[in-house]
Amino acid sequence: MPLPFLVWGVLAAGGAMAGAKTIKAVKDNSKASYYSERAGEIISSASEKADECRKSANESIESLGRVKLETVDRTIGSFLKTFGKIKNVNFSEVDTVSEFKNLNLDSANIAELSKMTVIASDVLKGTVSGGLAGAAAAYGAYGAVGWFASAGTGTAISGLSGAAATNATLAWLGGGTLAAGGGGIAAGTMVLGGIVAVPALLILGCVMGAKASKNLEEAKSNFAKANDYAEQMELLCSTCNKISEHADFMRKAITVLAKVCDRGVVNLEKTIDEYGTEWNSFPSDAKNKVAVLGAAVKLLKTLLDKKILTESGKPSDESDPERIKQEYPDLVAIS
Image (cartoon, rainbow, N blue to C red):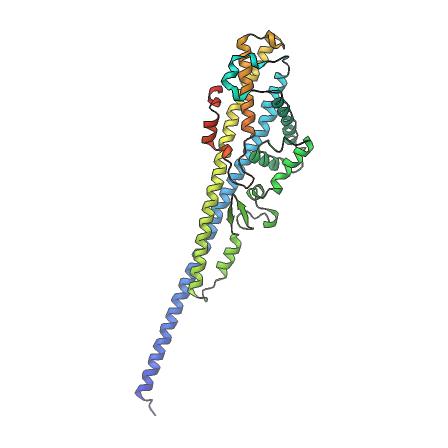
């Protein structure tokens, strides 16, 4: 018996509705898949960029630390050896010193410089546990203050070599904390100057787990999370780049000033060969040159002591290039 026309109409309408729902579901699934794939791409790209910034900052800090150690060992060590030959030095009678009144080299400075050379030499010889890279990173990031001012040389060396492993920021810059499995950006939650980097693996796992069969709103939510993560990574990159800028500037400034000091030491050796080791036998111009050399060495020590990072992991204002230029105009006068 033929079905009534009304029944056919209902069936047709139902089929149309089902078809429409199917089409919508396919479209929603397609959009969800798109948002999930884009979210994954955004996270991967942001993580890769941030990891490069992290590596660059770490390399800059380690490079600065190595230059500092070599400068202390070679330039400061050579100065102390040569300057130590002179007897009865009295800078107060030299007019040139007034030009560098904030850079007077006194006995306390000499004692600290001597201690610095011993530690730097031991680190460079490889006698420090923890490795040169770790010690260089710690010295590059935090300078001599706190490490070389320790009660004993052994204590200072131990603290210096262990800092890169125990300091959260240095450990992360070096490849990730132990808790993070050494995974850098991808693993673990870290804090760099107040920036909380949500683990990429956590977000990526959430995004990849959102299958197309789930609703489109969830996929959009994950897409938004991925964009938030990318913004965090941009901020983190900005901080890392600032760290690199400070470290690279300090490395260049120390290198330039060290060369000035090296030339001054060579001239001082010639002066001693000509006039002997008694200060009072030096002519006025020779005394002035020794005083200027002493000021240059004091300034060099000041730069060596500058921090790149604060205790909280932020780029330190101490090593800001513009601040250094304004704070130490004598650097231009000496060089």
